[in-house]
Amino acid sequence: GAGVSQSPRYKVAKRGQDVALRCDPISGHVSLFWYQQALGQGPEFLTYFQNEAQLDKSGLPSDRFFAERPEGSVSTLKIQRTQQEDSAVYLCASSEWTSGGYEQYFGPGTRLTVT
Amino acid sequence: AQKVTQAQTEISVVEKEDVTLDCVYETRDTTYYLFWYKQPPSGELVFLIRRNSFDEQNEISGRYSWNFQKSTSSFNFTITASQVVDSAVYFCALTSMDTGRRALTFGSGTRLQVQP
Image 1 (cartoon, rainbow over the protein chains, first blue to last red):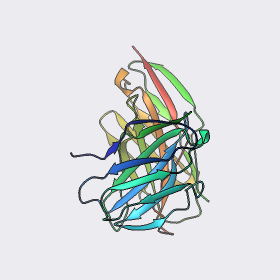
Image 2 (image 1 turned 90 degrees about the vertical axis):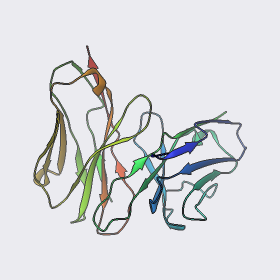
Image 3 (image 1 turned 180 degrees about the horizontal axis):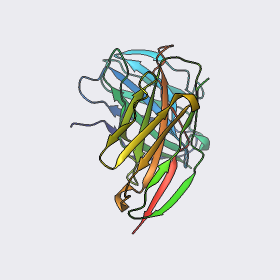
């Protein structure tokens, strides 16, 4: 497809379960980002990859959150032992690597509800 | 630290009215980029515009226009002759080029409702 795709679109997890969220970036995009968007708020940065290298994970809220992009394409965000405060929309974005500025293209998000 | 403030939580206008969405930012960097994104009810963020810190020229794209004023750290967005399809949440965002940190810092968004 032409855009960023994410799956699943909706996920309901019981507290304590592990979840895995997938992101397929735009073909050829070197950079990939994960954001968390709570209801009524702006997206908040979680982590950033350039190709397969995770260059910034400063936004991950706890060690229960883990992201990978092993082949520099598809990425997975994993949340272990989910808590109710993890309920949010998880957005993936990708961008071309340019020397001066870039725009990030966002996927539709995965809405995670922890019960 | 970077910060983006969108003081208007919600704005309601009647179709064909002009509306301005405010964005004020804070950064210590000399080189940075500012963005506007639209988030319609479907949820997907749609890129609208990018502006770098050295280019204060205003930009117009159809019914949309942007006013960047470095002196007041503002990057305001005006929709002329609003339409119902403009109803969405609009986010202003900032990224640093000085540090190489590529993350976008978003404001809390302004919900625009255009009534027919």
